[in-house]
Image (tube, rainbow, N blue to C red; front, side, top):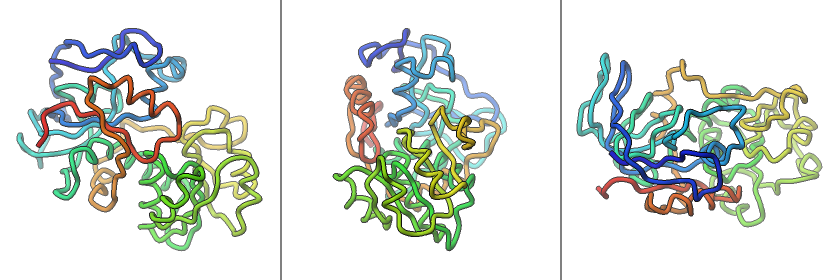
Length: 294
């Protein structure tokens, strides 16, 4: 089968579509014929080598941690799903951008969700639920999401609002109206953020990792970051994916959110997609089309 991979770290030009053996689903896994796969900042960091110490890879590495497709095969012990079912889900160890991919956690694709939306939903849903749980976001709380308009942030806004929280979201000037449309109170990101906040903040999530932790700590001690490696020195928790956790419930929340897809590329243009995500200013998700349209 064909898969999108890189055999060495480097710029987007190292990405190639090549032949690899088809994966076989193990216990608790399913295999899907992939229609679409999301591109995340984590994919970009892995490919560039920026995370080679944090997350060393065995090369060649098939990229992608989220995909949507049609169930092709079931591993031992899997129930509640059948070949032919449309699903979306996670493969956190990579390998999702391929003609056939294994998923460790999945949910049924909601009928109203397009394949493009489904391909970019899984990682953002899991990350959002994990981060909001870490800072105990619930009814009546006010949470500040620093980097709220991106692929993870815009879903985190929606999930926090659904929990009954008031959401303050930071973004650049071009995305202020977008955040307001998600029922967040928009704020400009960057230096001086704490001075721009005029209300009590119960919790904060550093979504973008642009070095804004000191500003968040001026507002609340209840801070978690998704990506900032300086977190430990500041006494801030860095939340990471837990492969032992059951992520199916988080993915089932896909029917309650709207996934904004800012761009869809054929997987033959994966380098262009990675270049776009690497800017750090992408609104919503960037998705690759792998298989045939529905």
